[in-house]
Length: 218
Image 1: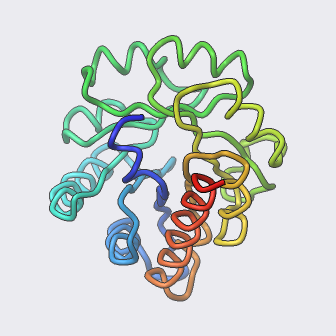
Image 2: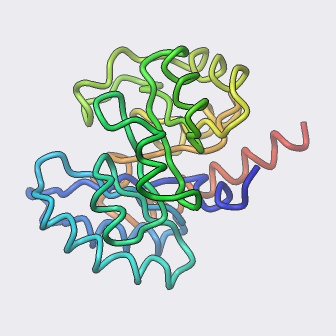
């Protein structure tokens, strides 16, 4: 397994929270302070230009901390800024086309809607699968029905590339999905909506790391 996955054991998906006065940058930097080493910048409503400005500002700060920055959906923004990679879904351009644009060194994640869809993405060169929602989620209304731990296990058994679990995952649930075989977790609400982002991130990172070690011993 490639070295980058050690940084991507916990991916914090940023989401601006107008009611809480938090923006993508504040959430990302606080998450890094809490031990996260991979940030996914996601905003379905933001203009490309504003997304570019945020990514350009964040990228050097994230690299300085030895962490990774992914852009959700927008391959053009990822290419222009020179971030570490992108995360794609079924409505985005195909993995092989993103690879042509970003080159062989980019990390490309993909959220499949079925095993067959995942097989196609893996064949095209996806580096990891973002699988879920493991639990019902309100963060992404179009995410579909929860697949549960058995759903995660099915993907883990079928594919050799890392499977990152997503969907209403907090520290407690992070332990469950890692014990089920997930290589890591992607979290949003558990961090973005936390009263203390640093502590929330620390808790999830600690849980994932300890359960990964437990799995290796077993």
